[in-house]
Length: 393
Ligand SMILES: *Cc1c(COP(=O)(O)O)cnc(C)c1O
Image (cartoon, rainbow, N blue to C red; front, top):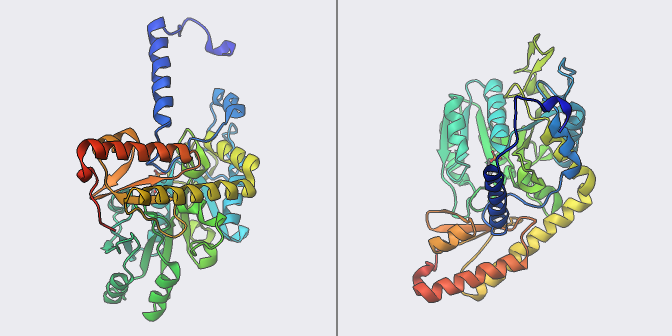
C-alpha cells in the first residue's frame, strides 16, 4: 500500500472479515478444479502486471488517437489489435478495432456499424445464436429475422436463401456464428456469399461472432473461412475465454471505412468517440498483450492442439461407456445427451433442451475427463441406466 491510501478514512478488515475472504478464495479455487462446461480457461498468470492495479488507468476514447487522459494503455491496446488483425488477415490500413468488455460488446459494435452502414438493412441470425444477440437487436431497434438452424447448430442455408429472396429489396446483414455456444458450429461464409451472388445482391454486410472460434481457427491446420480474407466486415472475439483473463474482455475488429461513419469528436476528452462505452478497461489490454508476448503464435498453436486432443479423448472415453458424444469440425465443444443434475452441478456443465456439453479448454486434462466419466458411471449405477438419456444426435 502506498502512503496516499493510508490514513483515517480507512481501517483494516476485522479478523472475521479476513477469514470470510480466505474461505471465499478457497471455495473458488475448489470450484475451478471442476470447471468443464464453460469456455473460459483458468490457465493464466498475470502477477507481473498486478502493480498496474494501483493506478486509475482508463482507456477512454479511440485507442488510435492521443487523449488528454494520459494514464492509459492505448499503446498496448494498439499492439493487441494489430496482432488480432494479422491473425484475421486484415490489411492493417484497412481495419480498426479496440479491446472490449467481452464478446457481447463486440457483437453489439458489429451490428451497430452494420446498421449505420445500411440503415434499411435486415439482420439475419440463426436460432442457435448466443442469447445476447436478440437483446442487442432490440436495443438497436434493428429489423431482424431468425433463421432455422441445422441439427449440428449451423445455420440452415436453404431457409436463409429463401428468406433473403423474399426480402431482396433491402441489404442483408448476416450475423454469422463462428462456433455456436452449445455445439461449436461454424456457419459457412462461402455458402452465405454464394446466396448473395445467386440473388444478385451486392450490398450486404457480414459480422462474425467468433467469441471462441476466433481464437481456435487461426491455429488449426484446416480452418473454416471466417476472417477478412473470406470477405467479412467485422469480427468479435472474446479475450477471457481462450487467451484467459480474470476480467472479461474481448476484441472488436471492423473495416475502417464503416467505422468512420459512427465516429464523433468529443472535446471533453480530446479524442474521437468510436467505442460503445466511454471509460474503458486499461488493464485487460495489458493482460492480452502479456499473453501474446509470452505465448506467441507458436504457443497458441500448442495450446489449441492440446484442446483438440482433449476433445477427442473425451469423445473416446464417452463412447466407451456408450454415450453418443460428438463435436463439430475443429470444435473443442463435446456434445452429449444431458446427464443427471448432480453431475451438471458438480462439473458446471451447461445444458440446453436435451443436450449438455463439456468444453476442453486449456486447463482441462485427462484427469478431469476420467474423473467426470467415473462420476457418470457411478451415477448410472445409483440411478439406473436412465440417468442419461441415450440416443439424440
Ligand atoms: C461467450 C459467447 C458470447 C458472449 O461473449 P461474452 O464475452 O460472454 O460477452 C457470444 N457468442 C458466443 C458464441 C459465445 O460463446
